Length: 508
Image (cartoon, rainbow, N blue to C red):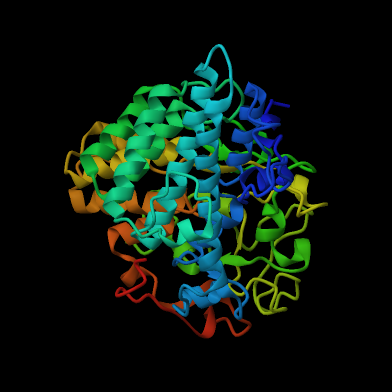
């Protein structure tokens, strides 16, 4: 087993006491945090404290819930907060909206606390502490990217607030100021971080540069984003992993495509990917989110054509055949084998546990998420050790391709970037041909981001920056198309449920 437990040394207790705030009223060792009288003495203290900061990176629920606010996922429980967000019935008082804000600022506070206290550590060689500081600065930049993309203007806090009164004086800073800080932090961190981490999956130069490319992309700064993405490509450190399916299985962990992930270990620091995503028949209390027909329709035929294009060969009788294999690696579709050896069948009238409307906990659309659902977790679905990928090389390639297309600098490097994904060994999709115009290439790269990065937390931000959310998100929610007993083809639909996206307010 590869060494990866150093990121997990700090448990919940250390995370809580390390970053809590309390006035030091008595002249004694504090009990609500680790005092500098007993901590911040050695390099190991600094390592432990930095490990605790890593826990604020996004997990599987964070990523999927972002995609759950888009057109590719649907909140499976109609009376949940997630369904309310789809209907546009949310404001700043909703628990989820407040939780994201609060948790993210807790992470930022943890970084600020680390940077202020690590200077106390006395060592003869500060290079290791400089690297740890650079690592947590990248995490803080990651958190601020999320904040500014969700909320726009946000408070830019770079020091530890020590009292409620001080907190009340905080104001929002402009998004431009926050972006400038993010880019500056990532550039400074990249200058310090090594290309190869001393331990598995600690922050690296490549992670800082890839995140910088994402930050420029989200700002619409095409030339700067292209340059940052090209720097990652030219590092020759990352490659496309040959198996898309195994990318999200234990077998593919710590592979050469992953630039940054959140590390987990069963029994020690686990996640609930299986119980959160798997079909009803596997865990008996249903998935929180299920994929929509819009996502299903986005996967091309093996010949490279969209299903609605002339010559695609698509029919409903053979709708699951000759499709982009990423469809069956990402979604449970009728006919797929489940981790318990049974065959997934959600078709109305099938009589299975996964049949649409069998119970309000079963899939409401006929699809389920397959990414990160590992057979090894079937026996204990809330105790998963699968690492959750936050940045991978495929995203960098798609960012590079998109930016060149937006600047109408379409060349062989653009085709190569996209085709590396389409011709992955276990995908084998027809490559993009040369000679297509800018508009057609834009459609292609946006669709590639959709299917390649589904359920990885980027769809909401993509559609917001493209300003396409108001067109793509609203409307009826549909699922599988199936043949009824009378021979008629019918589409599963959530009756009376309409997704809403108001461009006047929902771009934040």
